[in-house]
Length: 141
Image (cartoon, rainbow, N blue to C red; front, side, top):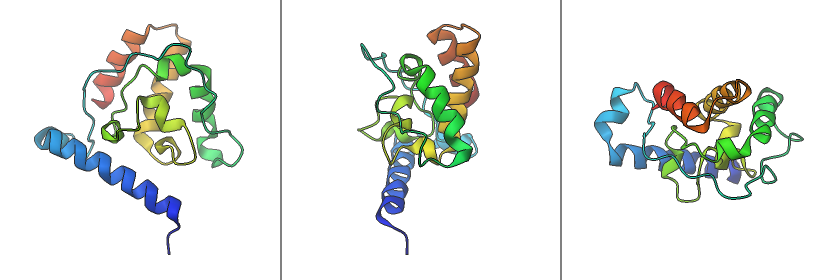
């Protein structure tokens, strides 16, 4: 029997998918199941930091690296709209939200993880937030 955290994660995913489908079902289906929505990217919050990003301890070893990447650039990730559908969940402000707390989508969602990886790669190349947003929209939107 699944535990409560697994059920909560499932409900968050379903809510995001339902929201994306309700907003634009033809677009969601046209992307082969990717439910990205190219709605506006959020404005990074003033003084944002990585203090709420899930600590590496307790994370699956396969995702620790991407969480470390997010910790390096919270001001960038906070300015990116997540394209997996979870942006439809009211508690999610930005892609940074996917990597915060025990129930963060970034622990399980390949789209969240791959957006963060791409953002980190471009961040390391000194690309601007606008350049990073365009690249993410092009690949995931």
